[in-house]
Image (cartoon, rainbow, N blue to C red; front, top):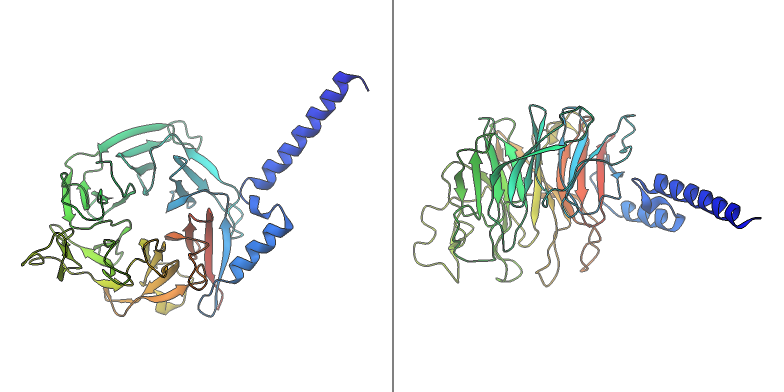
Length: 384
C-alpha cells in the first residue's frame, strides 16, 4: 500500500476510534471497562438507605461538580467549580439518567451557587455575582454581566446564592481564615442585594462558612448550614443548621455555637446577644448543601423535611461525615435530631471514597446529590 494511503487509512481509523471513545466517555467514562463498571456497581451497592429507597448514578464525568439548580426547562444545571463551567444535564427521555453533559457557560471564576430568575442564570463566582443570559436562544449563556464584587483571598472561596420570597438576592461569603478578626465585614456573613447587584448590605454575620443556604418553602425563612472552626479537638464545635433573620449575629469568631466564648478571641460576655443554631450536628462533618423535600415521590412523612449533605472531615483523628442526613421538620421547625439517610461513602476509620456536596429535588420528585470526590450526580428514588 502506498505510504499516503496507509497514512490516510490510519487517520480514518484513529478518528473513528477517537469518536467512539468520545461517545463512550461523554458522560460515563468510568463505564467503558468491565473492571471499572464492576467497581462502580460495588460502590453503589455499598451505600445504605432506608427501606424502599434506591440510589443510582444520574451522571458522571463531572469533575469537581458542586451545586445544582433546576432551569426553566426543568433540567438540571450544575457548577463545575474547578473548570469554571456550568453544565446542563438533561434527562429528555425520562429514564432517570442524564443524557449527556452540555456546557452552557465557561470562563467563570470558580462558579458555585446557581439560581434562575426571569430566564437569566445568576452565578456566585468567588469574586463576584454575575447574571448570565442566552441572547440568541441556542441554549448557551454567552452574555456574562457582573453585578456585584465580592471579597476574595484567604480560605473559603465558595459563594452560594439564592433569591428570597422578598425578591432580594442572598449571597453567602465564608471567612478568610479559621479564626480571626476580619477587616472586611462582608466575610463570614450572608449578604443581601437587589437583583441588579445594588444596595449590598450585611444581612447576617458571624457565620464562619455558611456554604449552603435555602428558603423554607412554607415559612419563607432563610436556613443555612455552617462549618465551625477547626483545631479545638474532635468534637468541638458542633456543626449547625441555622434559621437566619435580618441582623442576626451568630458569634464567630468570638463565640462558639452561640454559647461558649472562643478560647482564642472570646472573653466575658462574648456570647451576649448571639443567635443560637436550630440544629447541632457532629463536629467536622462539613455540612454543605441543604434542601427541603417538597416533591411528591417520597412517603408523606418525609414531606417538608430537610436533607443535608455532609462533605466529610479532614481535621479529625477519626474522619466523620461523608453522608446525607435528614432533619425532621414540623410546623416550620426541626422536630428531632439529624438522622442518617444515605451512608456508606466512608468505610471504617478511612476517609470517604466519595464526598457529598449538594442536594436538589428533581422534577420527578427524586432527590439528586452531587459528589465532587467521584465527579458524579446520584439519583435517590423511592419505589416502596
